[in-house]
Image 1 (cartoon, one colour):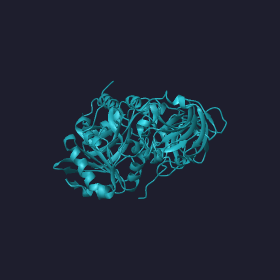
Image 2 (cartoon, one colour; image 1 turned 90 degrees about the vertical axis):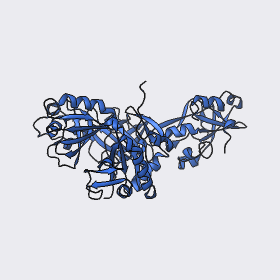
Image 3 (cartoon, one colour; image 1 turned 60 degrees about the vertical axis):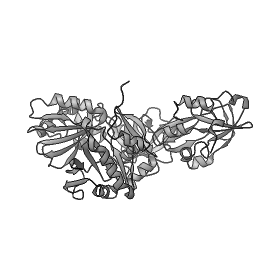
Image 4 (cartoon, chains in turn yellow, red; image 1 turned 135 degrees about the horizontal axis):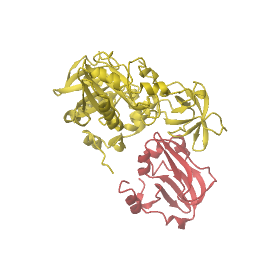
Length: 372
Length: 127
């Protein structure tokens, strides 16, 4: 068995009494106190997440934008400096290798954040695609730490954190899906107004050596404002409420972007990019589509449970990819791939919950939208 | 505070407290911690017969589904309605207010369950 990796904040998690789980080869905090308390804190105050397991690639050089245009599904060249963009790494087949966020740090400098479990797949894909582009690729995962502050109090917290300075543009001026730089204790700090919870929030990238001090400073500034450390369990229910896909559940090599509702992410009019030919060949008219399912009561459908179009019908019309009792909404929610014929919002379906068929209604995503 | 050494345990992480021929059954704090926040419990009906080592209920957390096994064969004489109304009692007080069912049993069968030391070694000392 491969030994699980730990982040630079592992001591902090242990001291806070975290329970741990294997996530993408990393030993990560699943919860500190209670999944539900952490979830509610992010919706009402703020949560502090260690997301250092995620993979960071620095892409630099005069051909960096052109390379990313070729390697990713989205249009990267038109991105303005200081902006972030959600994108996809596609396989030749059009299936999804990973979903990533691209940050344009400068004209010829990009940061790409990928999922922990797909680090090698993305690194391999990028290395294969770099070809003749004037580009250098640097995997910074091992020497950087990433901390997310998410929730309505996030801005107030990062502004109040001692040691953070020289932030330009300021936290207040930074738009959603934009990025900025600053310093923490004199060291370089990368700041992005992005997240995975459906709330306002920031993701802060520092060297491993500065991570623990930044974590402590954020907690000290944030505790009076309702900040609590939050684990992967809360992160999962938060992102599910926000209708955000999770690789391995809603996204995979067997899924093309349009099926997952991500057709808008693909810049199909780009000259050429890996996956373009594959997407063109996909006859997806009867391929399952990702939908939201909303139920009543307290029993939730879970990943892998079958979905039916009637209380007694024999052949399933779909399968759940993620499901939980929504802590915020108080009723069960799920994402599922279902036949296009039953994918329209309002369609009444049934989830087989361990032998009992529970009614559920096809619902537009997201389930939860914050008040802006 | 419940005297945990006075309880018996199963490998499925139930605890049993025997009073006469009535066994009170719950899940251990180890199991509750592993599940995470319990949000739904389904318990067997009062009056139903249950068979040792068979599934008689479900305990759902935000993340997963746990099955409740009958630790012993017998008849359900009481279920904890407070836990059905407020499943968080399982996390807050697994050995007390978070008890799940009471079953009339053959008291002699209880002796075959795990004692505290055996259960603690089963969980690698985590419980």
